[in-house]
Image (tube, rainbow, N blue to C red; front, side, top):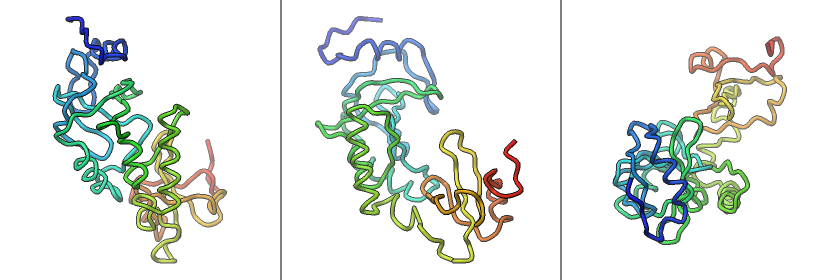
Length: 225
């Protein structure tokens, strides 16, 4: 691999480590060369994932947009498309996650794209205490307080549209397990429903089960083992 001498590569070692392994990110194989920190965006896959001119897929780091089939998923994709498609973005601190996806911080003409997406309710943050994630956390608080986008009553309903439909279907953050709780289950009052994450209210246990949810171990009569 030819050595790059451009002063752009202040994060050169990180980029080299990514380029050398030929990992698979999304549906495209990583091309074995360095990712230029100012590559053109040629495709937006969804609200937190896009592809650059060398066909490398880049995913947001510490930020999640809704899946396309979930509440506000299409709106998030459209917002990111309008923001970066066909433009050159600055990619900082690339790394790989557990699923071997390349993740990075993304800027456009000095604007932190994550802050824009989160502050306007197109994505949520799950930061790890870096200066960048601290910025995004403040943006997330703003979106929540103003009930924007994914935090609107449509996507994060505090009460069901039909008061009879009081069963809460939730997706766990750690392993994506789909569980439902009913009134009387431990932590039921504190449990929130986030439709942008694939969660929802159900009118009966059979309806919840048909959607792939299982009864939470926090409910009476359900073993945690």
